[in-house]
Each structure stands twice: as structure tokens, then as C-alpha cells.
Amino acid sequence: MLGKSLLLAALTALSAVNAQNEYLGFNYGADKVNGQTKVYSDFLEEFEIAQKLAGTDGKFSSARLYTMIQRPSKDDPIEAIEAAIKTKTTLLLGIWCSVPTEHVTNEINALLKAIDKYGKSFTDLVVGLSVGSEDLYRNSVMGIENKSGIGAEPDQLVTYIKMVKKAIADTPLKSVPIGHVDTWTVWVNGSNNAVTEQLDWIGFDAYPYFQSTMDNPIEAAPQLFWDAYEATLQATGKEVWITETGWPVAGKDMNLAKAGVKDAKTYWDTIGCALFGNYKTWWYMLRDADPTPPETEFGVVGADLKPYYDLSCKNAKPVPSPVASTSSAASSTAASSTSAPSSTGATTRAPGTTFEVEPTTRGSSESSPTNTAENAAETTGVDTPNSGFAVKATIGFVAAQAIAAAFFLL
Ligand SMILES: *[C@@H]1O[C@H](CO)[C@@H](O)[C@H](O)[C@H]1NC(C)=O
Ligand SMILES: *[C@@H]1O[C@H](CO)[C@@H](O)[C@H](O)[C@H]1NC(C)=O
Image (tube, rainbow, N blue to C red; front, side, top):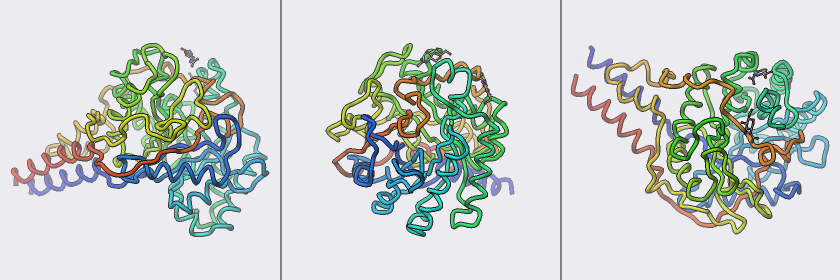
């Protein structure tokens, strides 16, 4: 009896930590770095490059968007959708919300038009919909101090979320999971609970590089990342999707954090390789140099479309969440803790003091979706094939030990 329940516990642990085929991709802004609006061919190029990145086995096949509207139209669907259909790229849709209600209505109309125009070939690709992006951060004490641009109040967002839910209630997207993307400091701020309550999932943006009020050398990045993740999980009690993270290949020092290819690769290997395939992840970002790099450049490929470093995770030493691996290792005796956030270190940091987003690079202060932080650029790439994402093996190994222990006890 006891043995059986332990085995069950171990199997539960395995599926909890080893979720297969989680969505994986990049964030894609509506504009190029030079402010030019992206059109179909630009998105197509990016999505193709993402899927051909050397060493990634075609796994970067999801795209997070920030707006539904193709500029300069009022409410025509963004042409990224057509490129996604062409390349079978799954979509985490976004609706830009740091704007008056009338503009949000245009976003919703663009979504409805896309459903009409493309039907199932579009709706089958949609994995989620985010109502807003970092609106609460921009509206917070830190966002205002950092001149991050126009944000939105929680009650405004609640209104917009309800508008969106109502608008899609009779469409094929009626059961699409609705979320909101924001910095982790927003999620641990109880004043935003009314937003959290409306959501199916929490979009989590975290950049240890910008956490300049803390000791944030690259060596500390995994701890900063996982502390923020666990704190978000705990504060919201909802499924957390990793909607933005990354480390710049160029840029100025942010306290102890140094931008550069070496540290960007370390961040990819320690955090990225721990996430890919195990957590829904949209990395920031594919190409940040179209046509030329901004001062702080986040791309994994440069203007020449070549990866800056080995993306394969082959020789990586990923650092999984200490909470997840502790609980799965312990699952032969304590099954119930596997997927629940536990308290390891998660709440030791004061919320609101840690996350800085550089306004000049991330979110250039205007409220349009096209030139926000999110100015993703295009994809690039070249290359091909395959390699395994090593994390899975690591985590799987822990789970395998738990199972072995359970069998032993039988
Ligand atoms: C907490 O959230 C509220 C509502 O979004 C915001 O007004 C306030 O500035 C936030 N607090 C901090 C410290 O950022
Ligand atoms: C944002 O503001 C905080 C203080 O609130 C500061 O420490 C940090 O350097 C600022 N970040 C940027 C990028 O200006």
C-alpha cells in the first residue's frame, strides 16, 4: 500500500517536473530597431530563422506578439499571423493595453478579423492571449522613476480583460487561456491582485541583468531568476509562463552585471537550458540588430543572422529551480510538494526593490507597442540541427531516482 502510493507519488513527480514539449520561442516586436514597421516578409524571415537555429532542433517554433494590429491600419490583423500560419509557428498573442479604451477595441477588432479571415489555420496555432504587457510595471514606483513610459492601472486592465473575454466568448478562441505579462515585481505587489484574479496564467518577465540594486553578476543570475520565479508562483498561485528573459550581448554594466557574448552564453546555458522544453518559454530575443544593434542588444543572432554562441545546450550546465529539484528528489517521501511552490528563499527579497528595466532599450517611453522593449527584431539564423536540451536529462534523472526509490520500497 505504502509502496504503491510512493510509486504513484514518484510518477506524479516525473510528470510534474518533466513536462514534454512545452512551447518554446521568442518575443517578436512589431517594429524593427530603426522604427520601420515589420510586414509579412519580415515576420516570415524571423520565424524561419528561429526554426533553423543551429543546435536547437527546430524547437524555437512559438512567437509571442505584443499587438494584434498591423500598422498603419486602424485594426487590420498583424501580418505576423500569416507568417505563423505559413511556418506552423504557434502564437502567444498580445493586446496592447497602455492606451485608451478605444484603442483596445481596435486590438480586439483586429483579433476578430483574424479569426474570420484565417479560421482554424490561425486559431489552432494560438496557445494563449496576453491582455497587456508590462503596463503595471510602467505604472509602478520603479517604472515611473525609470521613465519607462505610459502604463495602466490595475482596474483599467481588469476592464480590458473583461472586454476581451466577452469579445471572444462566441468564437473558436473562447477557451484560449488568458494572461497578462508583467515584471515579476508586479506579481508580488498585492495591489495588483484584482488583475491576477482574472487570469488563467501569469506572464513572468525577469532580467537579472537589470536587477541593479542587488548583487547581480552573472554567477548570481540563476538564483535571482529562480527566486523571482518562485516568489511569483507563491504570490499568485497560478501557472507561471516565462514570457521574457535573456541577457544582452552588448550594453553597459548594470551594477555587477556585464553585457557581453560570454555572459549571454552563460545565461543561456544555465537558465535557458534549464527552461527549454520544461517550462513555457519565450526568450528575449531572436534578433535585436535589424538593421543595426541598439546600445543594449539582446539578440541571440547578430545582423549577419549568425548565432553569437552555441545554442545547443550540449555542454551546458543548466541550473534548475532549487525548489523543483528538491521537491522532486524528495518525492519518494513527500509527493505532495512536487509542483507546489515551496518557500525556499522565494520571499526573502523585498518586492519592488529589485527589478530595473532600462527605459532607453526596453520600452522607449512611448506607448506604442512597436517601440517598446519589445522592439524585437527579426530573426536570423541560418544553421540547422540538433542537439539535445540537456536539462531534461538532468531533471529526468532526479525523477528516475525517485522512482527507483519507490520500487525499492515496494
Ligand atoms: C504596487 O501596485 C500599485 C498598483 O499597480 C502601484 O500603484 C504601486 O506603485 C505599486 N508599488 C510599487 C512599490 O511599485
Ligand atoms: C530604475 O530605478 C532604480 C531606482 O528606483 C535604479 O536603481 C535603477 O538604476 C533604474 N534603472 C535604470 C535602468 O535606470
